[in-house]
Length: 410
Image 1: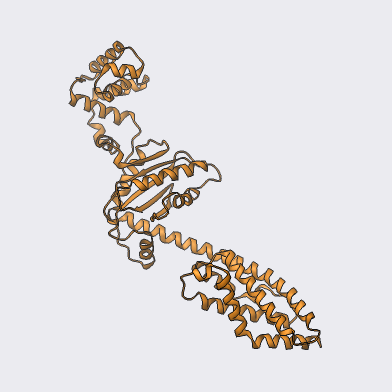
Image 2 (image 1 turned 120 degrees about the vertical axis):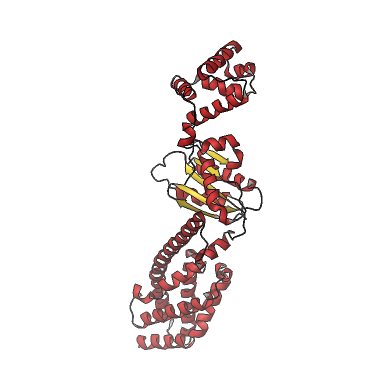
C-alpha cells in the first residue's frame, strides 16, 4: 500500500516536471548573482538539462527505495566543466544544486497533499533528499575541481605559448592566443614594456614564484591589463601602456612590497616603452639588462634610469674587456685585492666634479690624503686625472672590472 502511495505521488511530480524544472532554474537566476552575470548564452540551456537529469535519477532512486549513489550523477562532471567555462564559482554551483533539491522536495510536498496519510512519503522524501544533497554535492565538488584544474592548466599553456611567440617575434596565429592577446590589451599596435623579476635569494621551502605572480594583478592598477607568467626562475610580464610607463613602475613598486610581506625580495627590471608588440624581443633584452644593473639587490630599475655609460658597461663582452690597457687592468686588480681604497677615491673624485676637497670630506679623510691617493693613481696608470678622456677610460675600466655586471640575453 505504501509503495502504491509513493508511486502515485511520484507520478504527479513527474507529470509536473516541466514546471518544477522551470521553477528551479528561475530560482538559480534570481537567487545566485553569478548566473545572470554569466556571458555564456548556453548557460540556461545547460542548467535545464542538468536539472532534468538529476531530478529523474533522484525520483528513480526514491521509487526503488535505494540511496542515491555516484552513478546517479553521470551528467554532473560534464556540467561542472561547463560551469567552470561559464564563470560560475564552485560555491555557487553547489548552492544551485541545493536549491534544486529543495525545489524538488517542495514539489513532492504539494503532490502529497492530495493523499491521506501521505506525510510519511513527504518526510521520507526529505530524508532521502538530504542524502542526495550529500552525495551529489561531493560528486559536483570533485568534478568541478578537476575541471577547474584542467581549465587552469590549459589557460597557463596558452599564456606561456603566447609569451613565447611574443619573445620570438612570431605572429599570433592560433585563435585562443589571439583572443587572449586581445583580452590582455596586447594587440599589434599597442605600446608595451616588458618586466622581468627574480628573487634576490633562493626561495625557502614552501615559497613559490606563483605566490608572487598572484600579487602582480592585485598590486597593479585596477584597469591595468597585461600578461604575466612564471618562466624558468623568473616572472616575466608584458604590459601595455599608453604613457611613459611611470604608472606601471609605481605598480611594480607595490608588487615588490607585497612580495616582501610574504618573505620574497624581488629584483625587478623594466624595459623602455616600445611602440608595438613586434618589439617585445628587444624590450625583453632591455628588461634583463635593467634587472642585472641592480646587482642582485632588491628593488625596481627601469632601463630609462641608466646612463649611457652604465648601459654600455652592462653590455660588456670579452672584446670590450680585452681593450682595457694592461697597466689599467693591473692597477685595478691590485687595488681591489687590497681593499679598493684608490678605486674608491677615484670614484668619489669623479662623482664630485673633480673636486678633491669635497671628495676628501665625503671619504672622511684629510684633503692631503686624497691628493696623495690621486697622485698614486696617476703614477700607477699613466693617466692624467685632469684629462676627460683619460679619466673616462679609467672609470669605464673600473666599472667593467669592479662592479656586478649583467650580460644581455642572446
